[in-house]
Amino acid sequence: MPSFDDIVNELQDKIFDETRQAYGQAGFERWRNKPYRGRPAKAEYMGASTGTCGDTIRIFLHIENDRVLDAGFGTDGCGSSLISGSMAAELAVNKTCEEVAAIMFLLRRPPLHPTGRQRAARGAGRLLL
Image (cartoon, rainbow, N blue to C red; front, side, top):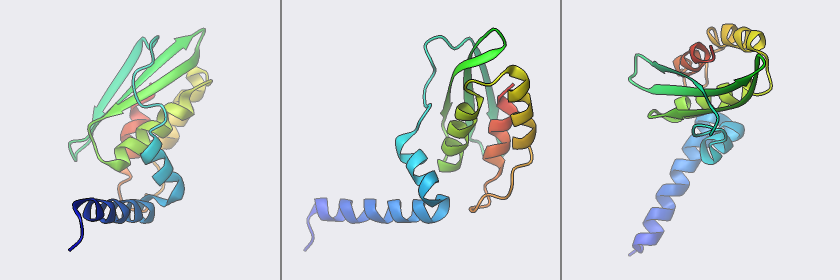
């Protein structure tokens, strides 16, 4: 009979494999490491969007002289929301507000996500400004 630890490890491996299949290796790494998660200490701007699925993504920005110096995100949603919030925050850093607006425009019409969950990317795109 397998031990509890063996069962947990097997389940964790299965979850990791399914996540890699759904999001690819880059998405899996972002999901595991969660870069830009959290509110930066100096963030003075925040936007939030709740998608039709019920997931909420928050984007936090620290802006000086019309340039995003730091960004972060938070979500109560699925892996797609986490990955999208992380990417939106990363894309905003070191950009001018005008450049962020251009990114926002592009994210409003993202290509189809492998899982069909492109709505999370649209939600993150709406939040950048």
